Image 1 (tube, helix red, strand yellow):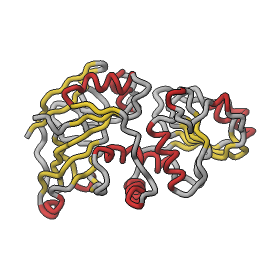
Image 2: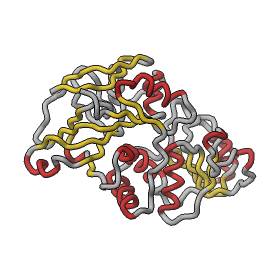
Image 3: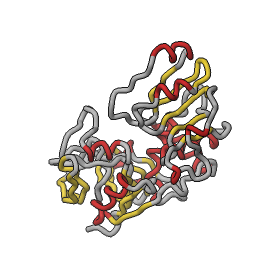
Image 4: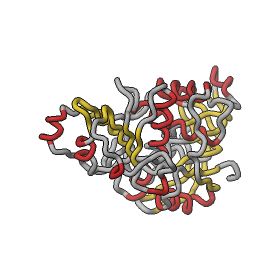
Length: 307
């Protein structure tokens, strides 16, 4: 079996080519992908070659960890899932390319335990489940954020999830006026310095001193972005604030279950977050737009017409 896939051959060089696949195992499902998302965080770092050393990292690789498609083949009890539309967080079943992420391909083979059936209300917006679960994981501490930094896709999902969980709507910072959308404010326009929990979704490496200065005593800073350089802060001020720092890592299955339940109940909406769509034949242009156009919140690739 083989598949058409997006392949990062090396930094700044992308190709759309066919890859052979390892045979499916007894617990695997085969998914025919309809849509996949482009991450402006990790995939931008992979594209630019600035991704920090990471287990399994290397080129060539198939990027992406946000895919939606139909189960077309399975064995044993998994046969009951054939025809289901599912979310797939990626695959590592490629030959001659790394599958550290592995979601940007027409056919994916992955353990059935890793795919999640989508609510009937979701079609291409199902690719947002990964980011939504990441946001849920970030807010799953002992307090909800009252300040979110960055109003991109992750920041918007954080904002929506805080409200969906019944907490007051947080303040949001965004320096790009085109992204403020009547919700976010520029940091210079916010005088407040008593936030109990600040969640950073910007990925900026030079913000910690600023954020510590906006904390209340014993406040918490949650690092929800992915940071390409070392982070540092001035200790004396953080010491006086008795600041706490928490890193939100990869989402867990229960985060995904929570998000799906919120979507099914109507408490969480995913509308308005996918701003750009391209056929997979336009992958090169799609990646350039996703990484270079500030108006692009989320770009998805449409695989339905490829052969």
